Amino acid sequence: MSSSGKSSDSSSANQKLWGGRFSESTSALVEKFSESVSFDSRLYRQDIRGSQAHARMLAKVGVLTSADAEAIVAGLDAILAEIEAGSFVWSEALEDVHMNIEARLTDRIGDAGKRLHTGRSRNDQVATDMRLYVRDVIDALVPLIDRVAGGLLDLAEREADTVMPGFTHLQIAQPVTFGHHMLAWREQMLRDRSRLLDCRKRMNLLPLGAAALAGTVYPIDRHYVAEQLGFDGVTENSLDTVSDRDYAIEFCAAASLILIHLSRWSEELILWASPMFGFVDLPDRFCTGSSIMPQKKNPDVPELVRGKTGRVIGNLNALLVLMKGQPLAYNRDNQEDKPPLFDTVDTVSLCLQVYAEMIPAIKVRHDNCRAAAAKGFSTATDLADYLVMKGLPFRDAHHVVGSAVAHATRQGCDLAELPLGELQAFSALIGEDVYAHITLDASVAARRSYGGTAPEQVRAAIARARAKN
Image (cartoon, rainbow, N blue to C red; front, side, top):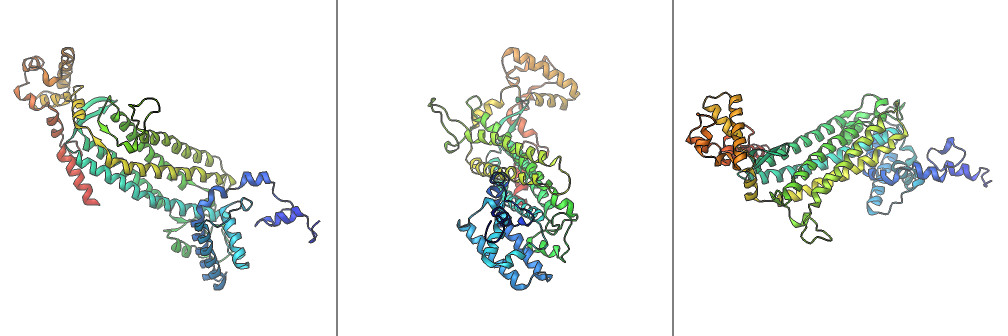
């Protein structure tokens, strides 16, 4: 027995901030198994901001004295400085970021630190930290997306006249411009940006005040805290507030779509950089070599982005499975929401950064792009359109051109290389002017519909984009 008359196990248990109910200390194995501070310490900034706002509110409504609130705010500022300086000692025994910071606050300022947790629970505290964190992350990712989108816009302008093959089913379909292709990538990024901002808007409601699950008996002012922390309002139902993580799932879904788009771009760049295509050169600083084959220049950055996409999709799936069977309200399962979320944040951020650096350095090999566009009868649709303009119904024109393509295939040449007489054997409507319609440049120039691939439309789209910025 200790001199106080209590067992050492009981004394150890009471060192926990929740230890009053327990008569023996937590197993060391359980402490290791259940701690989250090894990863949720990342939330320290958000935890301190939320606690400071909570303390100010408690003083405003008279639950804390002004002196206690001021001591809490100042003490938390000092702890923030300790953490940022690397001198703060994190303890697994204290379980999580919240209890580590609260225990250190009490060490620094005494009983005032113990009063901070009045009117709240770790349940609504972590929900607040998480929303603040996801909101901060979105605010950091949007400028990165803007950098990528801006790089694509510049590249599109540079290559507005560059003819390349457009593909469906990875088969040559119709000629397009490289600039038009880059604007397609940009449209995907803009939707990604919009999804992140939609997620931010939906999640920007304050959870603090829901307490453990039922609200609190104290006369708190949630709207005052929301205003301090930049939330648009407060959550409406305390049970829902502490139990759901749909905002984290929504963020990870939006992040997965960002990576899916980057992965699709990566696949194209990997193909285009190969000698079989030869459409682009990626700068050496974004590639690596082979340990055995000295000629190799491997597109490792796009390949890694393509691979990391699987991780992010897996993180989304982990969160979906985590939540699917939970009853209301809070469950300890939700501790596991952070590793997949944090990994998603790190991965998406790094992939966007590397693409923002790589896109402006892409070198387009114009001759190879043009030569590839000349293959595969990419102007066959233009011949069909020519016949339609001469009065032939489109379905009939389609059949005529299909027969002409079959003939050219047997001859081993392109449609534009067939003599006029041979073309006219398929339709008397074909005249000498046909060749002006089935060249690569004529094909892309003719597609002047809004959003089309014609260089004039590409430049018009770029002008519209720049006018919005």
